[in-house]
View 1 (spheres, one colour):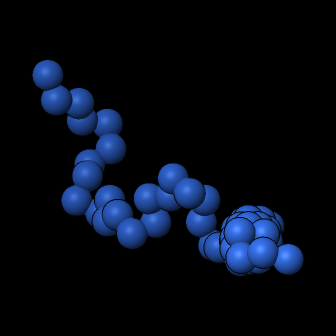
View 2: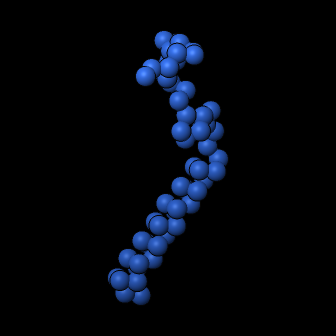
View 3: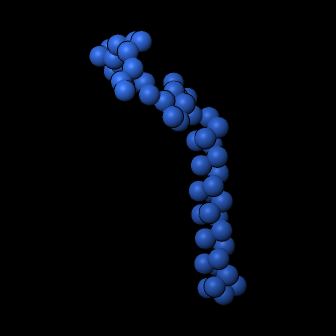
Length: 53
């Protein structure tokens, strides 16, 4: 086996590991909010019913 084949095999294994880790994180992470969450925003200073023109 020459050095080029070894390099290709190592790169392929690294790519499979990387994609597998991304899939694992997206499927099994526990997040309290969605990706577009506004949980950290304080809405206490906003009055309901008033619209600015």
